[in-house]
Image (cartoon, rainbow, N blue to C red; front, side, top):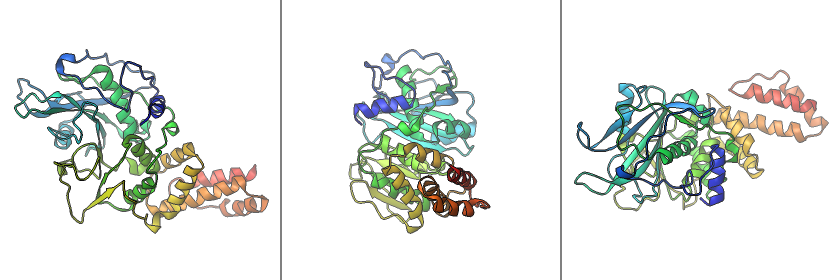
Length: 379
């Protein structure tokens, strides 16, 4: 990601990058325990989103050694802690073990809350295994609070990275952690556009809407921006239902729906082969989207080409259940009619008024679009 894109992403999150610090969303500088900053007071920023937090890593303590939850805020339930422990990365889990590496985990807990985790190196492993210690800091949000980030894990991940950059890894945890506050999103439509691989957006939207198999995607050059826009292209009701990992080696215990890794050929990253797994390489041409998704994808692609990013985000963020391809095709037809109402002549507008005056909605969002069509016809 270039500096301009990073600055734009920082602006989206309502934060100002400092010249002497890593830019948000670009890289994380890991510190050893001796370099750890003093914990910042947990003071809510203006409009901050309050959420529980936890840390999963390996440290020496009277409780022993090995990877485990070493700290958590008191709001976490025992069942949530058990699930987080099962799904968190341990030794050797990062695809890239350089000090600039960053991984992401996002999944819905059985309790209904959303976990978004930032995974980074944090010095050397203190046990005899050696190598890089994996540090995972987790934010645990209610689904209502997740909506403050448009149910987009990339936006939570970037806000969480700012917290970790400010306080440093929690390698000498206190007896308990206070809940933390994350900066909410101001204007997601300002998120930087991917400059390459946009055709894979439409292919993966189709994949996630129609195929429940686990998908492994490799070869993305800029996963933060690309994945952020993939989530914006998905209906709101679908976003929180897709468990995703990025930059972490495949592990079946995590139960991910989408696994994003640098490549398929690097050693130590054995991938599953079977009927329940789809492997894709973003350096190759994408598969053709299924015909059932074509009306919806045609609308997304046209609005994208017309730079109507804010409208895209508003549209997809308003779509609840059902969000299957048939329902989305109906919504796409209404969006096409809304554009005709805004640009058509009097004959077109009169026909639309007749069609939508007594319109009977069948899926979420149709009534609102029908009202917009009628209002546009009156202008």
